[in-house]
Amino acid sequence: MLKTSNKKFPIKPRTTVAFGFFAILFILDAPAKPQKPNVLFIAIDDMNDWIGPLGGHPQAITPNLNRLAKMGVTFRNAHTASPACHSSRVAVMTGVRPSTSGITANVFKGTGPNWRKNPKLTNVVTLSQHFRNHGYTAMGGGKIYHSLQWWNGSENDPDTWDSYFPEPHKPIPFQVRPPTKDVQAHEASCFGRRPLGNHLFGWLPVAEDDPGMSDYKVVEWALSEMKKKRDKPFFIAAGIFRPHIPWEVPAKYFDMYPLDKVQLPAHQEDDLADTWDHGRRSWHQWVAQNDQWKQAVRGYLASITFADAMVGRLLDGLQQSGRAKDTIIVLWSDHGMHIGEKENWEKFTCWEESTRIPMFVVAPGITKAGSICDRPVSTLDIYPTLAALANTELPEQLEGESLVALLKNPKAGKRVQPAISSYRRIHGVRTDHWRYVFDPGSKIEELYDHRKDQGEHDNLAYMPEHQAILELHRSLLRKYTPVKTPEGKATPPKSFERLPNNRIRRTNYFPMAKAVAEAKAANKRGEPAPILGRKTAPTASKKPGVKKLAVIDPDREGKVRSGGNVLEVHLTFRNQSKAKALIYWINTSGDRVQYNEINPGEKVRQRTYSGHYWLVTDRDKKALGIYKAENQDGLVHIR
Image (cartoon, rainbow, N blue to C red; front, top):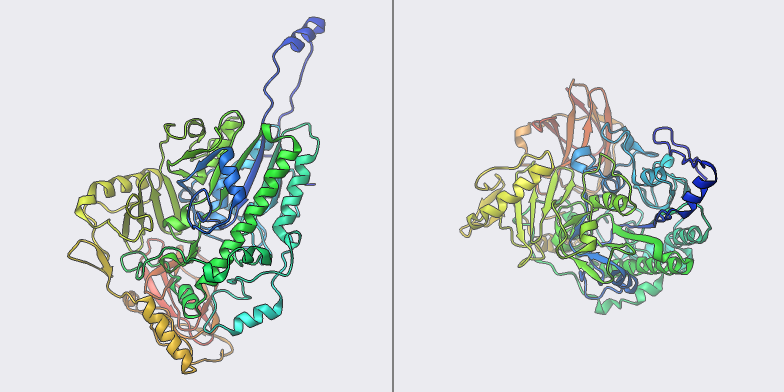
């Protein structure tokens, strides 16, 4: 059991004073205060809209999420505040917008909470703290803040819980992996560099049934807490890790999806020709060149169905506890997931598949069973909604909007804000029918009409007839974030051309089909597989020592792209200047992808590969120099 005291945010004891016999009679005769509702807070990792109530994939088997949808309100246009585990979860638990805090991506800095070092979050009252401060017992289990089953770290804040299962900084119980022989056989059947290591980007069954899974153990803990007799209402946060990668669940869930019947998600060839490049096309190339797309879809669907079974156990347990009628249920996912759409895997974009999430609320006495809300809402709204449902004052830091009005009237309830998602420098705005995406680095703008284009294939931002809609969404992004958007007629960035029909196209675009064909041909010849059409250096061995890298003229930006062999090296960036510097990876399309910020006097060690380019800029993003990783570890001095 964790310590329950909290010096910064003490829970004030209640006192009752009796003034004689008549006072006692008065108290006894007074109407009883309404009992505070319990809260069951279910967080699911990496679950996109491939579930029955959202219709994202026609084959998804999710009977328990279907059941939950019939119990309360389904938000069909719900979106994450940030499509990355760490930034999304910090936003949910603090109620602070990622663009306000500056936390817009994942971090891996060991034992946290590192986010408390952020001046804007140092003293915020988290969601669990808020309920503790209002007389609740707050308990957590599984992944609520950022953690991974293979990463020995956590961003959890132990002082904000009364207890945590299994441990506050080891929140995910031991997870079994597939048999070694199965992993080796799968690795041997593929060629080229698999994304990530240790088969973490994988999709094989485990040789266990449900009780051997880490999520089962978290649910078992939550069920035991529901059954306990208490003198306080409970706030139970249960984090379910699947369907996060690797997609490894018991075989019975794979068996529900025969491989020959699996359907690929709707997609369009060359879908990135008129958009921002997410920098992960090499993931999709590896999947495609090894004919693994259907297998991966099967693994993801199996993992969704396993997670759905865990939700079913929670719903059954709550009903059996006798507390269903006085317990608020909220279920949400930290972000969506690309499964090959737009040649992307995982999340880390501000498109629909990355931001749209399952989100359900059941509030006894307020929500009507089977209700549907299609207004745009955000995970940033969860904190103020729960605080309002519990009849508690809302902390000042909250930037989301209470959804109580929509819970009461999903069709006509008041809604002011759009749903805004931020990842690193990219921002997305989702309104009732439109999505706007803006990249301040490349200045690319995207605009999609969801009434006609749910897959977001046709970028309308550069068409004069949609100028008014474009301006509206620009203004919404400026209103709710510090982002400065373009003004006036949209102008294509320098790496794009405007076509006669007012669409745009990337001038240096390399088709995925060609990249896959070249990779297969190279593998047949016994040569290393090139990445997206660029020549791959022969296999090399790493040289000893550390080499000081020479600076490449920053004017070469736009003319260099990462490629090369699969030799892993490390670069150490030392900031010897008097100002903050920014570190960008130049991806395989020549675009910037921000990785780090380095304060004066600090250094950062970055894993990379030989042949990859890195860009250093000042705090205003003015290029200072480009550096190319070679066949040994490198040192970069920033002056």
